[in-house]
Image (tube, rainbow, N blue to C red; front, side):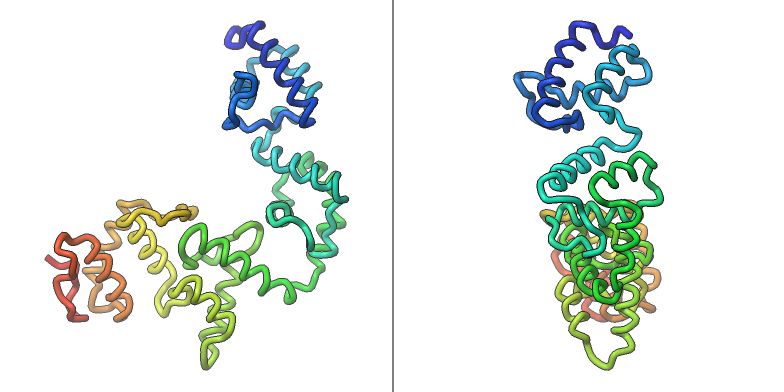
Length: 298
């Protein structure tokens, strides 16, 4: 393969050896600042992309430095594993029996994701997790932890994280966040709240995160509302799009559909849509304050 010259490869290999001597692996982020004027991360990323055509001797020498220099799973997973391994070497193996208590937040979240997706991981990934202490037996012990005791705590943690990341709690029932079945949990909480005679303590905590976490209309409508609002205003600082968020053209179509079904909307839905119409207008106010008159009409 001529795409990587012998001289260029040997130069990169020297940097790779020095990196392994310091860090013990080659899961180098290619966004890192070049070290000694050489971007090792990008060099390795290019080799991974071209790995099918690399000379066997190149592959062999890299594998001698780090057997997982080019794993069949995302390199970001491998970097996270090395970080977790460093923690396990310093503090001891992780334990599922104590519900992952006492671990740094980043490590607990990553391990919960691995537990939730364990059956989908490659056998080699499962073996790497076992080196951290997360064996199948420990995962069984984790699942045996009383779910009722951890449900509210984990639910609140997940809702705080999700709301901070995406700006709302209008999640579908299938939504999972860091290994926690957030959509299913919120659906259960909504049901309990709707059967209660007054707002529950948990309900008040969720309302503080998102006023419309439990709307009297379909959640799909609420998700489209948030997507439309963000497409009109731009995402607030720190907020990112959620998986499967509607595209701008879809939200424009949704906004037109609200005009067609205006008479059937809840008064509070009309108020929300009315504010979106205000945002769109150049005059700064809706055309009408009457609840039976759509501010979207021309």
